[in-house]
Image (cartoon, rainbow, N blue to C red):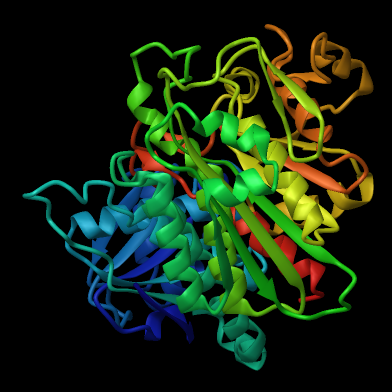
Length: 496
């Protein structure tokens, strides 16, 4: 999808379709809608007064060709009663693109809302529209391969003086949208095609195109590095594991290196502690954290912040079998700590334990891990918020600024010393599960054991990485969650 900025009065915008936003909470038109209404001699206001349009969220009303407007068709999109922020605007843009595509309108212009900072509005509109355009049915033989062709973002003429800064915001938005799309493509693939080896090959190809350094650590090399936790998960599968290591060398002060670690379990049966059959097909997206990290690295490479970033994605299948690890086994992690495996379905934290440790060995001074880790976080936060955990207030504050800039919804959870007692080992140093209660927290406490004092943020995206049902703004399937926040964190860390 192409994208561009237009500094223009709404009435002067030409093209197939022009969209203005109208709030359900505001009794009077404002911003671009009011400006267009004046040019059209009150046609929009008259429509609102008639009661035909309420302004509820995602409501799209076609007005056809308006006198006084250059566009061939004018649409009014309702924004609902909620205050309009980046999160809401991104969803509105997704719903808008999906509805216009259904009308075979593949090129459109949308007026940025005046309530939002223009740069934030640009990012939300671009990432939202592209997110709504994602097609999960790539293996359907008779699918209609129709995609949006262009979105033009209409900004007030007086912002022309800020064109350079807003063009940079557009570049950032494009890079983030492309990174999210790459992550979703990976997450949408069936597990027989997206094996650990294939995920490594896709990462390698992306790295070559983006200018990143890439290393694929094989099982043999992992044994040399004593990655016992990672290899323990993989030993039940016929598919060999691969640990992806990407490096972006942007410079900066040379003292700080951001480490991004993503869970890459390409299919999770639960191993010997096997999952129920219902919905097990969705376990192809258990590598969504790794996909998010790869998508973020693609965007970071495109935006070139002055910062060194390392990404590690341990990829493996968690399968039952004669060679699979068993409940009660003890694995020795790369750090030297022993892990008592009480439940083989708690495998993500095992591969992350070695990934986090290796990232520190390669020089990471701050760490973020991203993973579909626990069902417990879904019980706590449903599919609305990503769970966030951190061991460092200063780093969490920086992360929260990045999250706010991205508009993604995340909620901080506790990391309290008292929770460690749930996973204190009896045979080994640490248990890989802590019982029924507080499962998302005890999983975070497990990971904390492998970052120790390094500033760290843990994102549990189990509830937000996948949509079980289509929404107005997005089809069912992978969401690309966390990519935008990781990119903003890298940019802010580099002072951009």
